[in-house]
Image (cartoon, rainbow, N blue to C red; front, side):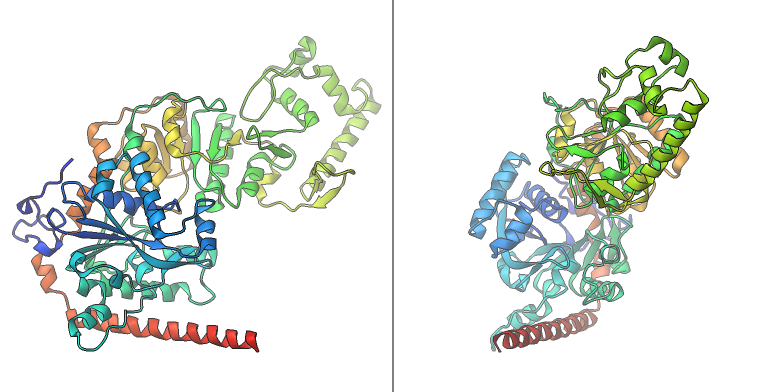
Length: 603
């Protein structure tokens, strides 16, 4: 879809007389746009995928090379391996070729890829922050003839440690542009805030060895005011860095393949109705999911079943929390299903089977058992055998009853023991032993496992081809704007999410079931389990798509002529000067430390 390019069609704040300043008009297809970001594929992170899609869709209707994507190049192979895995590149051109193939094959943007320019800036990976930082002044990498409109993805991140390029004497204009940076080299600069770095640091303790969260917040506010004309917050979860020039708006979209009709796909397991996909870290709301599963069981008498996709450093502790210490001993990596001990399975399935105890004893029928989350025929022992096993002998005499009580006490002690110690399970172990294995969370002391399966990594778009998945349950409140929630809506799934500022954009869609408390969440889950989601309307498809996101971007980034005139250019230059002095001092300190350490090492 082509953008509405008429300048007259736009007003600022609904005031027709307050027309937009032409410098801020992204609808003008003659304008050149540079989209600058902090990450690049094959690192699949939000700040690599979304800016790439934005740049591709901005090429529509424009001449070739009117839009340029500016991305980091990591010259060190070990840093590439850390982020890209086995796929590394000898040159930036090799990485560019890979990205272009991805645009054509995975994003369906062959024409847009041809129109797009890509340039790299040298960068390095900071392990403390888990982020990429520029090693050069990015402004100096972009040719002057392309310096028209800049869209800075994560402007604070891009400019925290900026040091202007040194310019020789005699060229005062070039020296000023180099010193003052983005807002003085480009006619218009839009900053899009992606990450809540205050919460990021507080939650993970990242970077606190050299800069505290309040200091970082102040620095972020300084650089955003110094280098951006307009600032967009993806959601209200983000801190306000420049309130007078900020707008809160979701300017992200969903790839076109999520809207396509399902293809034929045979999953390796029989799916349940509900799923989650994301990083397996506690911050993604797994504690809330566990609490909600227990609340659902208290309310309805049974757990809901859920398939969980993803990987992460906390996968083991999360899976143990779902299954408990004795319910699940070892993950079978080949089947991605979790196995129970044989004795515990028999006893648990017997007492959880339908019907009275007397009926099971009289009929002596096999009960249904198997892997958690999946029912299959199970030729288990008959009821009398199980009861006899519990008692140790039989339950016909008072002596046997006493033995049963003794065994129950013994079992209780074992439960306490196994909450602290685990068996050695190595295949090459010649003797049975135990090792200290403290609980990773309170949840793994549960007596009844939750029917969940951890099925590993999968591309979310594959879920579109598994129609049995109708519900995406996401209780996380840690995101700024959850991409997987938008993708699930695009695929026509129910999404069950908390009423939270990060989810405000999604509440408008009919298939979004937002809740405010535990009881309401239970009701939403019951409704979704019993009903099919509504087909996605064309209007809702537009809102979720990248076409809709680009339309919102060009509408929200405009500024009036009056707003431009209100700028205090002198104050902005003072902010730039203050920031430049700070970064130069920081680089001087870093350089001194490195040189001193080098001399000490050599000495």
